[in-house]
Image 1 (spheres, rainbow, N blue to C red):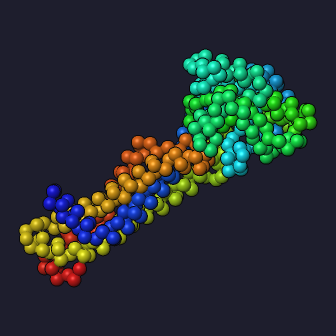
Image 2 (image 1 turned 90 degrees about the vertical axis):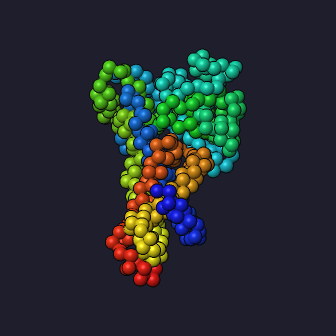
Length: 405
């Protein structure tokens, strides 16, 4: 096997430009393939990690229609409901519109209790760490109406670099202040997600800070809740609880639709169409482009190698040797291009996450994806080399020597 491999390497070096362009095409194709697969896997992981004991209640009309704040107390009275908190989209940005991240107004007395298994507090006032950090953040969250908790991504992103204790101004898009100034928030805690569906670039702040500004005429807006997150008891039928919530508000003033957290997460994927199918179709096109790039290169090499095949057969080598040469060449080209594409995908992972932020939440080039990309590259290289080398198995030395190549 060493003889075909060494000869294959010499053949590759003899056509540097052609083979180099093929390697480049494969690199780009494998990079795109890794990107698409990672996006789909990230979406699926977010849905799989949803809590099996949590519901989301929204308006039956539209997600963009607020629910009355009075609904929270009524939901709390339903059998099987353990804890409820409101979420309201804020929609502001930091300094420049391109510096956007998600912010939600929540019930500061309930938020951390609802997410005991979903987030870990890693920074708290006074440098407190470990289990006591959550209590320290809860105390600070209750003591300052401007208090906010941020994800680790907002701390580490160079665009923001928010630190514990910082006062950050956010420019509103939905709820402008009457005096035209920015809203100010004080960072009292930093969290790390423990579940894939929890983004690390989100800020949570007190809903009463927003409501008090509305009541005092300091800002334009009214009380409301975008959705209610509902933790249920572990020993109840979650579907029955959802039906009871919707039945309670069947006659208004705002009808509700209550679904599981997993279904709510899936909604955002389905809202832009069958994205996995769409990305899968693109991925299939990428695979074909890889295959035909290698096949085209191998077929050209095969036509140029017919006389060489005849000489090798005349010297006593079997036709399979010429076929193996093309298989080795196809494999080397595919693996080289595939490896470059994988390295490019890994190197750009952090940059793509910063650029697309929550749009590609859970984006990660993991070990299993690397192995899959290498396996696909290897298989396509072998198949392309074999397709180009099959004619050698059927040609006699005389026919091969007569060929003009």
